[in-house]
Image (cartoon, rainbow, N blue to C red):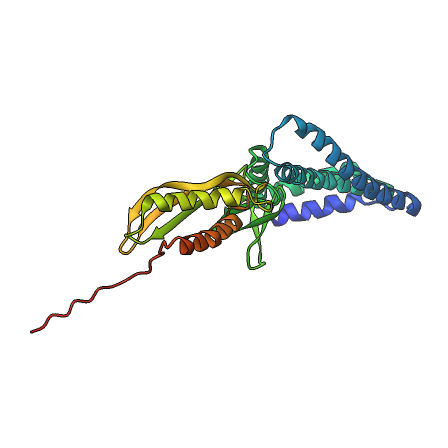
Amino acid sequence: MNETTNELQNTISDAITTSQEISVPKILIIIVSVIGIRLITKQVLYKVIERAMRSHKYSSKKERYQRRDTLVSVINTLLSVIYVVTAFILILNEIGVDLGALITAIGALGVVLGIAGQSVIKDFLMGMSILFYDQMRVGDIVEIAGKSGVVTSISLQIVRLRDLDGYVHVIPNSEITTVTNMSHNYANVNLDVGVAYDSDIDKVEKIINDVGVELSEDEEWKDRIYEPIEFLRVDSFGDSAVNIKALGKVMPGEQWAAAGEYRRRLKKAFEKNGIQIPFPQRVVHSVRS
């Protein structure tokens, strides 16, 4: 390893020459050009990707924008790296560095870094897989590597999540083995409702369905609810309640808000119609001697 390092240092030293006069204006032009091209590229990417996505069907504009922003972010990052590397090479050439000797040095460095950079390669390949198979997008709510939150950014190396507490989790792509996407295409509101054993189940079913329809027709909610929450089945018999399963389909990411609003309205409807939501009870028998 020491011999390889010494050889690399010697090669880099040989690559540097001082015979050429440095042109500061040319270097500034290279830097300004790269910054300008990068800004223009991002705007062009938005238009190109937006046009390419017209042939694909998405459940909502929000979903289409999430996919677009994800692709733009990753492709722009990749192109930015290429621009920076190109500018770096041009600047080195301008200050008199022998590029042929430098390429030889980079090749020797690549052998050293290739051994230590296996995880980086794995991150890159997994990042490509995430994009190709559309496993998640910026703005999706996911669970990966034991962490849950909203995807704030995706790159070819890492994914950033922000959870409900506001914490940001940075997860290398190589650690992602399973992606649980809770906001892709649509989401279900899956509710368990407990009612007292003396309740009229037919009446309970009607109330549950009526509240679901009422919520789906509300001006604030009608665009976010695809299928009204409705009675599905009597799910089980608990110690103190008959457990009812209710199910509905909503816009991705809206399942928690919709479920909360539905519970609020259902409680009022149960109270109005005399349906009790039981709490655990215990009967104590006293034995007299």
